[in-house]
Length: 113
Ligand SMILES: [Zn+2]
Image (cartoon, rainbow, N blue to C red):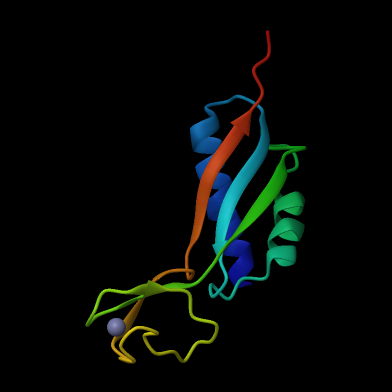
């Protein structure tokens, strides 16, 4: 039920920013390593937006690749695996800088005359 609480907060954020306008799309960035199943997100999203000003909105999911930075030489790279070394100096002192997050990036609202 991890996805359910995530969807609830995505909807809260979108509603807050929409300020009563009708929302047509919500764009979220989902890290490749966030442990979130994108198809689950869409399913819950569609189920929970009925009778809100988000009704009919689509959920756009952008996959954010995993990026890490070496703590020793500051090289940034995209590891293929969860166990990785710096490709420049071989150090294991690396830090994940993106790819684990989930973030609302944009909402699209309808402007009605
Ligand atoms: Zn390095």
